[in-house]
Image (cartoon, rainbow, N blue to C red; front, side, top):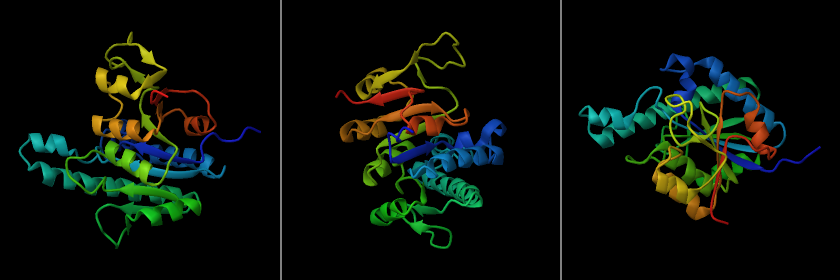
Amino acid sequence: MESPKYRRIMLKLSGEALAGEKGFGIDHEVVNCVAKQIQEVVNMGIEVAVVVGGGNFWRGVTASAQGIDRATADYMGMLATVMNALSLQDAFEKMEMETRVLTAIEMREVAEPYIRRRAIRHLERGRVVIFGAGTGNPFFSTDTAAALRAIEVDAEIILKATKVDGVYEQDPILNPEAKKFDDLKFIEILNKRLSVMDSTATSLCMDNRIPIVVFNLNEFGNIKRIVMGEKIGTFVRGDD
């Protein structure tokens, strides 16, 4: 049997993905599907970290455009990510996966405060670690949080879960003829302004040589396929 290509991964989930077809809130069928896919790789001995967004409840940028102070709006968005993190934790634990939620903003009654060494220790002990509240700072996206935490805990790759099967030159829903990229370099993402991660997250990954795979979360088994080295979605890497 082939050995996994990666031993420690960072999974980036958007809040919108957790909402499913509802468009708002949490679709528990989607959460359970995510949990089952993660269970597959955890049972193989893979160490899994997760960063989750909060767009299914709140988007700081949108709220700011409507007149709310941007920093305040972003802090509210961080709280939304914690709700999603707790929902994921509940689903994981019901499947008998040991799970810890670590938050960049302290809220000890519901989660552990983020401490890098503690996070690594949890991963080494086979626990799924979910990072909530982004970086703890306004003006930074959860994509940036995923890149930052991946670097801090020495993840080997970031799995960016989306509703489509990779990165396209244009939105494939609006333009069915849009070209899909199988491989990309970080500099191409920045130069072409492709919608993979924001420029801060992309630059962090480029500077620290952490590859990204953009894939369709809705196709069951994709997380395992990536871990085993199968080429799916779009693989983003540096120049070397």
